[in-house]
Image 1: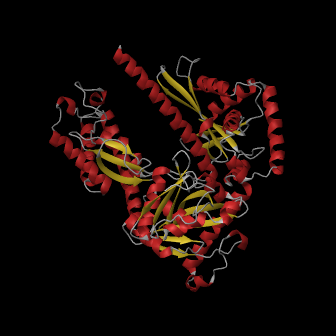
Image 2 (image 1 turned 90 degrees about the vertical axis):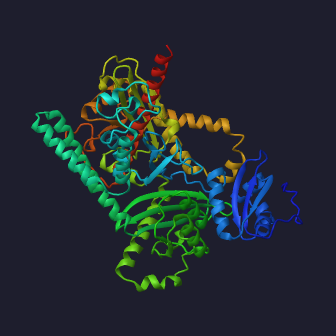
Length: 616
């Protein structure tokens, strides 16, 4: 059904039934998806005089609507589920998009004659990528089973080749594969190893038998004076022991109820909602994440929760909110359908600044919580912590941990822009460098850079580091001083400017070229802090390189991966931050990103070279 704005006619009707509506623009692109108890009433409400005349975010949405499609559902629960599914599929411009959402990792044993063990993820439609197979997971970052994929492949001699070659490869000769390609192992024998992996991924079954077998092999190798083999088995046993202990911890957590706290506060002037989530497992608090979304149309706390858990494979038993929601019972049913277990949603009143919390006057429904003592007090404190963090984040408009990072590293200013350098080499022919950029504590991928090493012919990390820093900041000292002046001018200017959302959105199509220029300027901007992946030697090389370029005013540190030690200029002893500190996690995140980015580029170069050699 077509609707032209503003020539919308009041007598146009839609079904008076529950369902989902899809709003499209002039190019037939879906720009907003919503659900309704009564499609006719909800859709008509958009085109009231109040919405059309007001200059707010919803009015911008309405001005772009050229067509509305709808899908009728049997009830509101189905509408909830369908809405979440369609939002994930179409990713409309005006809906809530969970940009900070973690993509969970799964392991897959493929459905092949000789199966492989692969790492896999879901695509945007929720489907698993790659070949078909049995799925295990999800595993979050740091899971012992995810970290030991390579070890499991080697221990159980699982092939890594995509297609069985006609001749045995290097993996067979170094003892990592039983070469099913040349019938060195039967299909039945190979599948016994696969079954053992499945049991280890599911439970700890067969672990003891395999551990005892390896221990006997180690003793036998030592008796036969095959000391290298014995040492290799000893190291494998050590990893297996760690794997088993980690698994016991994970199983303990999974058998206990998982709780999640979700706090929301509103910036009413700019029509933006800020959300923070925090997971508690067995009394241990972790996994804090921040989100924000525009208060457009039906975007609300309920729609955020629905979308958040539809995209999240781990749904807790209990969810605590700092705001009472109207569709609580329906949402509990929806989450039960998604997760397969009962989900209870409860309200916790956090004693904070009243103006920061929507509907904070609804305290009377919290009598049950007030009657409880110690446990409830702890829950209130957690919610207050969330709200406090959110308020700090909004006031400063950047990750609060950057303040602490400035203090700990004794920096001259807050490191809003951080660059990190890493070297990835595989022999002399495949040496590359990578530079990743974070702005206000989050990745800024348009500022990422990759370098193929050109000036260094041997495996000299120091020389390579000097080269990539030189190439990344190939500007003169006067340009640096000019950038410093421009930064100071921009900071003053930003105080005076009032960024009206409506003006930006109405002219965004006209200003595409200006935005591209602005993004390019962001990429060229000099950082507030440079992080080098390495130790004291790598840091000294970076400092000397920057001095040669006239950029000695840039602050630089290094982060050594082995013990996560931070090396600072002009100090001999490294700095060690507690592992649970957010400021350390920011440094680890950007370091790991640069390592991943460089490794991906290295692999691509190797693949291209191998293909060229094959074609020749």
